[in-house]
Length: 69
Image 1 (cartoon, rainbow, N blue to C red):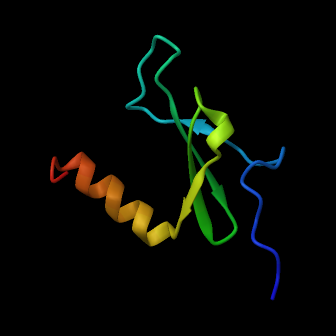
Image 2: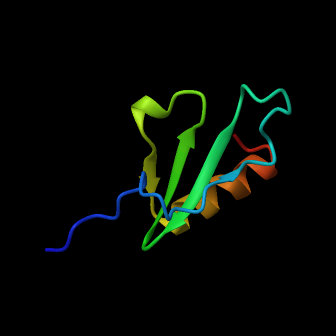
């Protein structure tokens, strides 16, 4: 069994959510990793990101954008 990708690695390309505030304090970031999408709170990096399957993340984003959540 291979090791799980480390979402804290330096080569992860984190991007800020377009729904995050502009004040710099409320920021959700996502990074696409092999076989997973990592999500983290930039103001609380100590707890680390959580990872979900790309299909689950896509479904979540679609539901949010349609105000179903």
